[in-house]
Length: 79
Image (cartoon, rainbow, N blue to C red):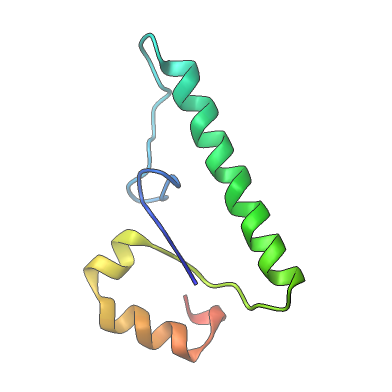
């Protein structure tokens, strides 16, 4: 199970909606791109090793940890 942080993994509800600006804009764009690539790589590797991968957002866990735990226990299609 992966709990993806809303900021670092670009949550659809809380992720960045505007382009990066300022002197470090390119650095942040590349960092977020690498995070997304790492997420895909981690998922693929775990699945290749026979794991069932469940990914949930940080905000979902914070909002209702008991509900998210129940959904995880029910199976990945419920997350």
